[in-house]
Picture 1: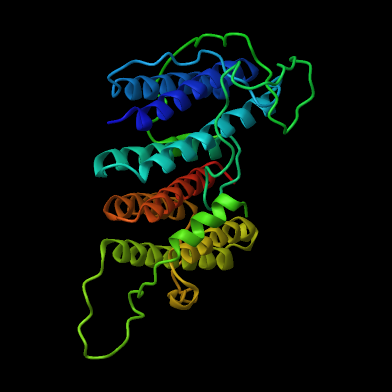
Picture 2: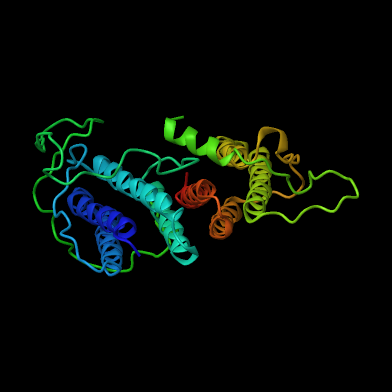
Length: 181
Length: 149
């Protein structure tokens, strides 16, 4: 399987794991646990993708967050955004795959879509057709915003610190449909 | 509707097909359906079932009609995306059977699985991507119904 297939998956999953690390501290209770579990879910998916590659890439460790994340509402919004962007990655790549990988990718898209909705995104007829997933820090030309900046819909980078490590791990639910707000 | 979505729909709707139940009634045997035609027909029939189920649920539970109508509308978009306008099967009027929220969620989950299987057998890459997005949409619907929307 080519790097054209698995590198976008690994990068997207890495970005999602990073984002959950940024947003998890802004949540509390069960939502925070869900976010922490999601880190493990996306790291595992990243590792699975990397295992398909003959040559291991240097994945970016830090990504631009498209808006400041200073409260729970913004955290939920970022989680939903990351999941929706992964839906796009998996759906786009599914079309180019053989049957077994195609099935795996569509099932991944389904789980990501369910998680996006569970974080508050309104269901969409054709999810995952939005903007690409976050850029790595340094990839764009924007100046990182500060945590005090007001939320914005513009793709402004904000976080440059390493996200907090997971405090616990657990079953993230193979089927995102079981997740609830 | 953004450009990418519109392009996706146009690409997927570009192949004319004959719907199950809409075939002509001549004595001429029907040619075997291509994998893509079969996938479109199966998807369309399932979407019709979902639309009818939501309409019945909305009629039975007016307090939740907004939610059910919202989801039914998305299934109408799914249906329109896999069928040309003149070939869409007719959505039956609500019958006596009304599904509750849990049953609707299960129907959505089943639909997402069916869309996945259809995408596996489909050959046209635009159709595969379309079915993948519909499967993802229906997984989102199931989560929406579970989440107390």
